[in-house]
Length: 560
Image 1 (tube, rainbow, N blue to C red):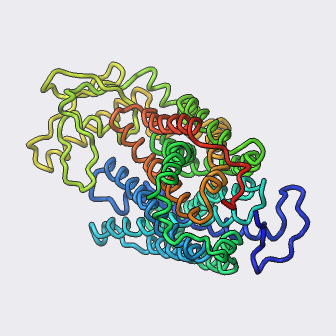
Image 2: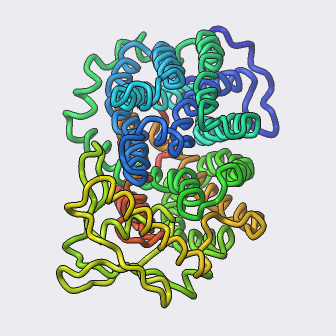
Image 3: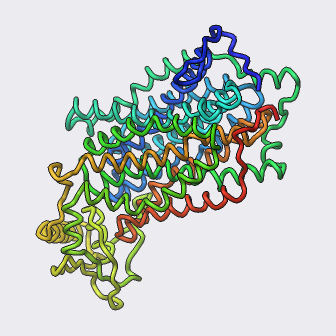
């Protein structure tokens, strides 16, 4: 491929022995990657602070529903990413990669800054979550146009035989952005103490204004991709990239195969290994958020270099082989890894579950799926009341069927706590009865050895770190080579549009909804590991489709 350098680049220096990347190309990679790191930082702040945002903006519903709704607002940003991919992908193929960069980073940075300025639910009521979701949608649109541009821009500068290595640096940006967001959050937590949850959570969002200024300055220094310039000069650029990408079956077929046989599995492995692992530690195992964030950050530090290792390896043995192996290994080992996390992070809960298992004995027809996004439903059956109490305590339970009309019971070992029917009660009476029931359940759980929080003295931090690092390495296997694979699958004239859509449907929908879907599955069944079936099923689907129908592309030139 042509390797014309940006107009502002210095003359190429001799190749660096360690990386095989000359100085001019390093500048391209650094400029593209750094801006993308800042965009991912903006996007992941919300995910890392979901529990606090639930209390600030969704206080009008019960605790369990509030957290699920906060996760849905997080997922809303992912839901619109494919639309951002269409809008900005089309612009990138028509106008150029560089200018799309500038639009997406400004949109992302301003939206994130404004989240830090929003009044809470207590101040303006339902307008608060509405405004929050609107800003999340703008963030998602911007991110939908960002990744495809960065990956395409770097790949079109890379020499043949090194696209996996070059684009793998872009792949580190999502993890580095998450890592940066965790560091800022930890610094604010440690500095502000209890005030962090009151008002200090806003500071990481407000810092985005500074990051936005740095990112825009960096992006302004870049010049257009040489491959795109050559194509445009020769008059071969697409006049209708959306039509060519999705209205013509040969390319649409490739888009669909790259989604189901590539990005869908990559996405669930990515989000399970980083975000769901964090949610599992804090929400299910009740590990202190600071400790959990430090452990995740440690795993990211250890694992991040493997993005580049696997990206470079894909130039030698192929993209497809590494990504498919990552999907398969992850699917086969998630259950033992997450059970081991329970063993090492909260052994007291594991011991209590073994010695005094919990079950809810109830008429199944009286049990609801307790998700109420508008706060209007009333969960007053004895079954709903019992399950809600256990969900708040973070305790695993099984379900047993009682005869029709029977009042539900919570069985904790040999102890039985009868629930109550709340239908027909006035609000004050129901509240009093609920508080008394929850106290009974919590007292029984404490007596049976169930801890309210993970005991810091009993957390085996080295082993938890090892397990989290393994999950991150799975992420690097599937994510490190994916950009080069997608770039090489599609022709230059419609590359930005074609690769962006499957990437963002995979990561925005299959991956972005993983925490919400898995958390709801756990809440419905009482099994803390049940939510893992979602990423396992998607990863196995991708393995089968990818192996059978997608080609290897490592030796494919970009001029096609």
